[in-house]
Amino acid sequence: MTSFRLALIQLQISSIKSDNVTRACSFIREAATQGAKIVSLPECFNSPYGAKYFPEYAEKIPGESTQKLSEVAKECSIYLIGGNFLPTRLYP
View: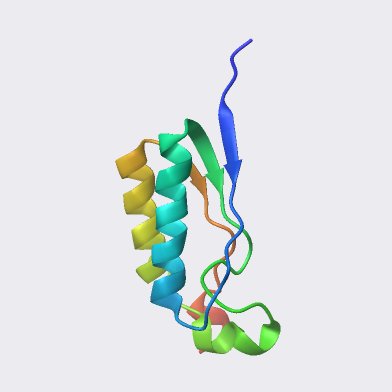
């Protein structure tokens, strides 16, 4: 049987998307250095929680958040579950 380490990350979120993504990337790197091969972020990891925030925080996919997450996953050689993203096509 093959085993692997899984990391589930919880974050304190602010109203500044770039800060949230940077914080998430920091925790992802920390999990990888502790041996995690799969890392999962929470829903709304890059924005405040609640439907009223969705239009403001929606972004293109690929976009700012997906690009950063892709880079850190490649850098750390891990599989990353990026929570959820709000695509701009739902919120023009």
